[in-house]
Amino acid sequence: MSRKFTYILLLVIFLGATAFIVIRYTTKQKEKNLVSYTLQPRTGLLSKSPDWTSVKKQAYSLNNALRQNPQDSKTALALATLFIQEARITGNYMYYDAGAMKYVDDVLAREPGNVQALALQSVIYLSQHHFAEGLSVAQKAKNLNPYYAFIYGLLVDGNVEMGDYKAAIENSDKMVSIRPDIRSYSRISYLREIHGDNLGAIEAMKMAVEAGPEGDEPTEWARIQLARLYENTGDVKSAEMHYTIALENRPGYAPALAGLGHIHIANHDYNQAIKLYEEAASLLPDYSIHEQLASLYMQTGDKEKENATIKELLDELTNSAKKGEQDESIGHYADRELAYAYLLNDDPDNALKHALIEYNRRPDNIDVNETVAWVYHKQGKDKDALPYVKTALRTNCKNPTLLCQAGLIYAAAGNKAQAKPLLQEALKNNPNISTDIKDESARVLKSI
Image: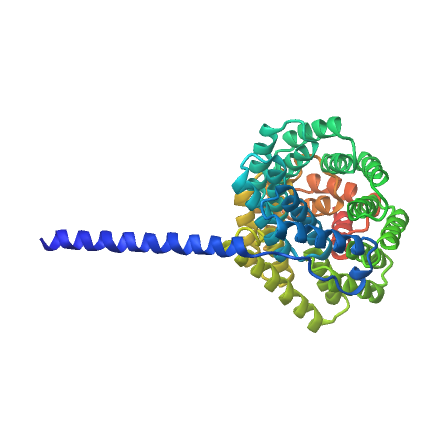
């Protein structure tokens, strides 16, 4: 009798706990559904962007229309699209991701087969580095509408990030055959770069820039990628020209400021480089900008600012990851970025932990394998790094930083015959890459 009573009591407790969880989840969902999102003010130079006035007008109009008719899917998706773009411009991903996802989810709750809503959901997942989820949603959207060019771009992105480069190329070919535009040309460029065709990548990215309206954020983003390709091939003058044009077309455009800062690094003008990177960092909370800024402080001996920047970087990345665990609509996977941040902080053990977490998500991606290999190198475990660096090189990518890292790993592991051609290829055009890795590669190459 006692045992039977115990079973009944346990069942009651279990059912009560389950009911509590269900009620709590339902309450949270209701609260989430009641929340509305509005455009946040831009500050500083961002408020002087040529598109800001029209963006404000558009956001006001869409919010007003949605208040009058909350069931208007077309308006909800237009607002979600605006939020996704605003997140790119301002870096305020947590707020705008939550807003965009809320309106997308609202539409999908009413219309599960709405292809545009699925496409935007995929965009948000990919932006948050939830690559497997983004790829899955994009595939679902493609099955519903195989003639929507935008979907193939998402399939390109998702497959690249998951390391299925063959599928990425197939989807890129399909995309450009349906709609040759800035989106398809820029993806062709990236795939050419991944497969070692830097000149072809430059050609395609030029086409992307020419296909977009001058001054629009996607156009100037493509121009920044073109400048980066020029830097990697040693053409610093062309890179500087395109960074300057991007900044003229979009005042306060953080990637252009950072790009010009990188040019000053090549000229060993570190004070001007720091000034430009600090301005960029104040405008956009971008990981790569803060990482480069920390490296500049390190180079100039400003230990206090270096430590503060690294701490801020680690705090932001960790906070974003924690938010993602609590609510997938606002948080980003940031383990690859955390791996490099911990290397900056001289903590290779935590760097390896996060590099392997990302590797377990995406074992076929060349960039992830590069990260794991480099962390092992920093730990002095170059033989452990070899299988990862081999995978990182499997597409014949000619990125000079990757080639330098691979060459240094092979040299440290005792394979000088493998190291020499990699280092020679990396340095032959005098690319504008990180000074420390470039100098180390040159020293090692001389000793081989």
